[in-house]
Amino acid sequence: MKELLRTNDLTVIAYAQALLQGEGIATFEMDVHMSILDGSLGILPRRLMVRDQDHFMASVVLRDNDIPFGQ
Image 1 (cartoon, rainbow, N blue to C red):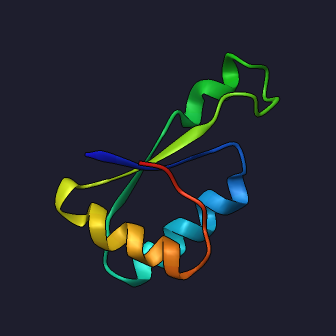
Image 2: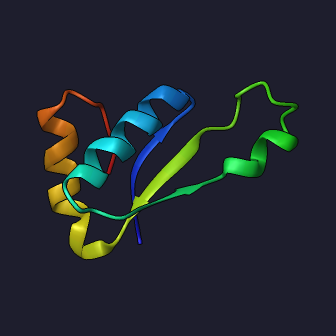
């Protein structure tokens, strides 16, 4: 698995997941339950992971839809 996106904005994560699902790219969201540690303040970012072989295509999908991503 490779990290595709890291953000505190839950709407960006949901939008990216919907776009990637539409392209047939499976995603896995990490650090979902970390909000317990930060008191649900949204301080700790969540990470969106994809399979190694899907990373390039997933990054193209995000870039085409103007979603800033790392890696």
